[in-house]
Image (tube, rainbow, N blue to C red; front, side):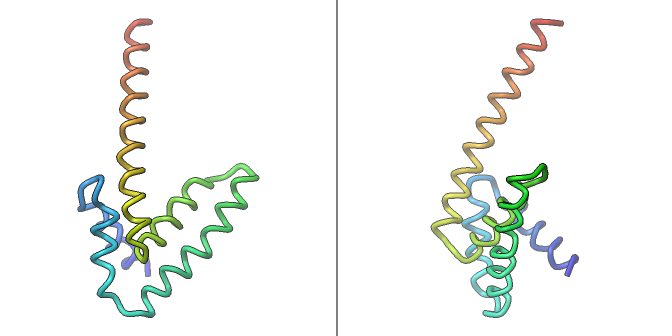
Length: 108
């Protein structure tokens, strides 16, 4: 099971940002129906865990992200939205990093 997850993670990471979830979605469509069902069942199971951790200190964002990625294997619409969100998040992170570095350089 862990080997399977590592293989899927490597497969997802090989695609370029902004198109990785859509391409991964398309690659998963040839899988057996029971495998697709397991992905959805895992996504459904992770979602309430994320909700629980949202109210107590914990890694809620991680569980929400994993759940969304698993749902995206079955939904082209969601896969495209995650690709857009990934690009937007990368842009925000780069902007924040550049701001932080500029601020740090001014005070050094």
